[in-house]
Length: 225
Image (cartoon, rainbow, N blue to C red):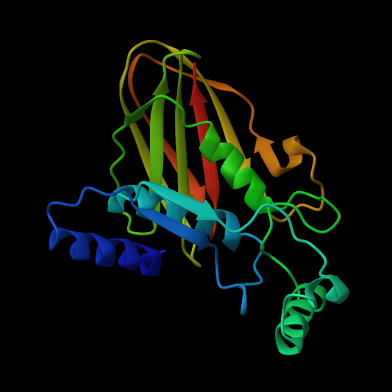
């Protein structure tokens, strides 16, 4: 994620030298290292959240995640417009290497990364302030006026567990809280298994403090109603 942030900062520094230009910035085809991918299944969903946080903090306008679905390469379809070396490379890459690119695999099964984007998609509405003193823990919070609810997403982009002291300030009323943990390890793609719900709870008006253990690469989501 810091390398991605570095490319954003680099381009913005270049643009400062051309103040007459007011372009939008795009980062194309981003993902983790697909040539030598981390094999911990918890890594990729948390990586996605952390990279998007770095993008927002860095002022990036648009990004294109690579990609939606993995596909088999038929060499005979590539040969007419690619060199023999290029065709062989494409077939080796897609037909022999383990794949982690797509949100859907060759069998259209959803990967854990899909559920990271699903949680991020719930962060609609006005962005709220989230501050943290833990360098590996970041998050997003929003107030969704249309659904009349608030949303919070936190993650621990680290190989080590941490304990998070979560302080919620200025709650406008007594609120019902739903807590979901992204489970990247389970063998089931039932959404309730991947986005594992905890029993709902209630918080009192004003403020509240919660103490929570975060496993390595843990991703947690709360809704407040």
